[in-house]
Length: 333
Image (tube, rainbow, N blue to C red; front, side):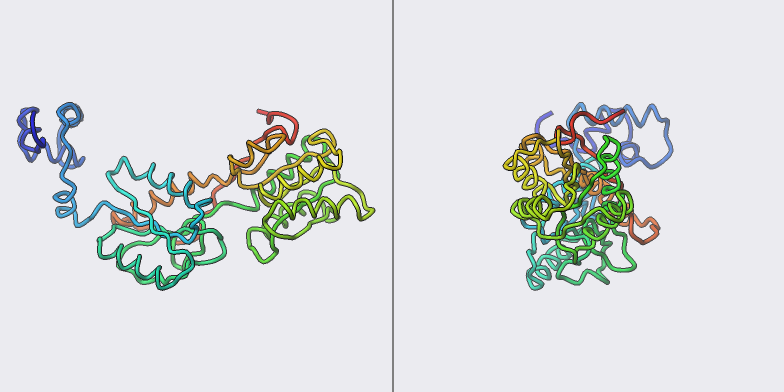
């Protein structure tokens, strides 16, 4: 067929009425499963694509979702967005990203633009789970879901389970026989840092040292100097608050002639693959499953846009441990 294939072309090719073809594509109306499947198959074969504008007018939806973030570097937002897009593409929903940095005025401009475009919903994401975006998203005429940023009390918020992830890392160090453990992490005013430190202490024991600092490789170097030069017992297992710190720890240990993992096993947090895989040896780390977190947020905003009743609250998704050579081999089955 030449030109755009219409619903009438599809109905003619399938030998059904336009109404039946429409009902088959929209999964409503009564008809045999075989008939519905046949019409969908023919639609695919002849290249029929529903007109998005007409579909939106009929359903009072735009089939677009806005993603708002202040994570302009994209470290956390990009995997979240990948999960959102993956979840919504099969539903014919598009996602567009607006980066607001930490500018409230820019945030309001982007929110107003989203509302002008009549988005079906907004997903807010960021770079800290304990800080909200610098723009008021309460009381909007569309549903708002929060992912990896603080939400309002009556909202649906998704985040990684930091305590569970830290517990996995610490338990693994003990599983491979490490007994003198230490935790080198970021600023104590981060909620995620406190949750991970508490889980580490619970699993490792109250005497295991916890060193708070900044999110950098240089802090990893400094922490090793403190642990090795203060005259105390030197650790044989170090759990780090992120992959940057862990890489600094491994470099500092190598400079001192300390073997990783032979003398000290090291675990990071985030599974920032470009960093973790290039560390020598490659870094064992905790993956926050940000893509899955995004997928869940995408499906949730879709449910809310379709008018389904959803219980508000915080939903913590489990992390997973990705074992590489910095802990000395593959994880047990």
